[in-house]
Length: 329
Ligand code: SAM
Ligand code: DTB
Ligand code: SF4
Image 1 (spheres, protein in one colour):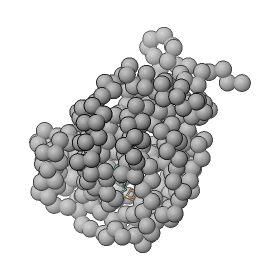
Image 2 (cartoon, helix red, strand yellow):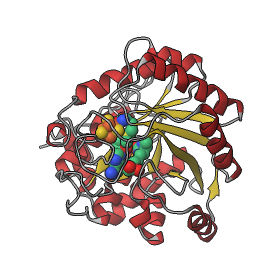
Image 3 (cartoon, rainbow, N blue to C red):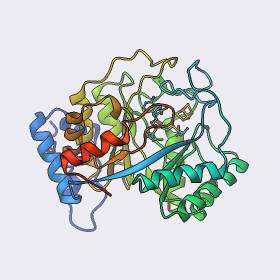
Image 4 (spheres, helix red, strand yellow):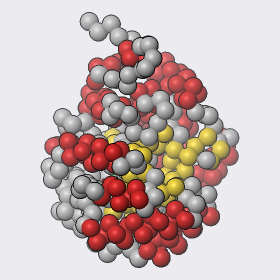
């Protein structure tokens, strides 16, 4: 019988120097099994101990290279393997990216995330992206890129260009991974995250829910993120946007409370990380989003478009922030 409390990992009570808390899958699953009110209360307590609960960070997102990706991620409209509405486009020009960053900044975004549909960047492509990072950084914005897997030395080049965050999601449980993606492995994702961390870049890593995974898979994904040592600085939790033409286009939606429980579990297991309420927000009610903020989400994508899918429009975000008394940071 597991005697560890479902609401605290054993390592948090250890004397200093405190080792990183290691969460077992069963411990995270026990969080999911708590009565919802107890879980929300605990998550909100952890949130308040570590953050101002009325502040939400806002990141803008831009697809700098859309479509034609050789990978087979079965949720993604940008994979060349599926017949979707997403057209393949070339890498954007640096000046167009900078213009989009300026526009996002004028609307109030503090971080600019640039995404590319690559397995990983080629050296020439990386050169162009480093130029984008330099110029966006010069505007006074934080920078984030998501370019796929990195080879030796590439993270260092990004760091030298001034990159703040690299997004590379674990996406789902290691044991469920090959049901969703076969063209690369979960361990490849961990390797790239290690390269990013080794270069001194902050790690943004999270996952997607609603891929047909079980609660045990969700708990395992949360544990794998929390145990990255240290946990990612930023943890995007995406709700699948079912993209027509992808193998997951007809997948049944995940229950809202299960999504909420995942936000709470992420907050409790990664107390100091920003937890981002990411893709799928457009389909959520304002009440659901408010519950997610209560459960510990404190970051959003703030832009009318994600990469290829639409996002909650910024006017409704502004009105939601006003109604809830949230401050953007
Ligand atoms: N190619 C890079 C990669 O895979 O890391 C960067 C871009 S990729 C689109 C970034 C992340 O977007 C994925 O890891 C996945 O979590 C998320 N994503 C992609 N398609 C999605 C969808 N239809 N619904 C929700 N999240 C999605
Ligand atoms: C992340 O975790 N979610 C963002 C960002 N990182 C790059 C992407 C969401 C993509 C949603 C589907 C689309 O726009 O194609
Ligand atoms: Fe390519 Fe990233 Fe989409 Fe996978 S998620 S198909 S790697 S763009």
